[in-house]
Length: 218
Image (tube, rainbow, N blue to C red; front, top):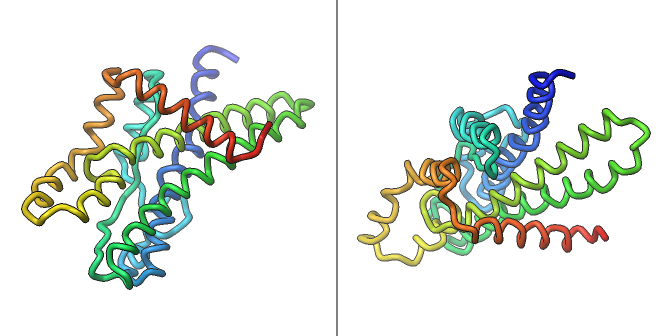
């Protein structure tokens, strides 16, 4: 396999992990929102488990793969929706449940990829399949851990910002939401420019270690 073929092969092994991570996170939130009283996102198709549906062209494709090509930690986003407390059964409590469902989706996917990586050792008799599974699993772990960390950054539209906004007075809330359209691009630029602090690497390792503990893989 030539260098260009190997490079393309490595890149394709990112496709499924990235699309699953960014799409299913938002799908989980849309589905939970539906069951908590607001079906708007589900009616718009955002609750679909089809990983090729309702993606953000920049956030789901261009941004993550530019970071991957540059050798940086991966980050991306899918089409999101506004969580509206007044349309939910229990208002702010349901907002918290919806936000937690997004984090839970990434946690479960990270644990799932850890198990794929672990179980792939039993098929070393097939080098090609072993390579595909282990590399895909490692990629899946990286993107899901990074999304968990990214959504803890208090800038709109990251999920933790939605929780913070619930407790702000209306005047401050309006100012806080001004970052909503540019927030993901700011995070992308910081990672792409390699300007992130070493704390981000430390946090990534801490989250990954936590996922390993939760997976019960020795």
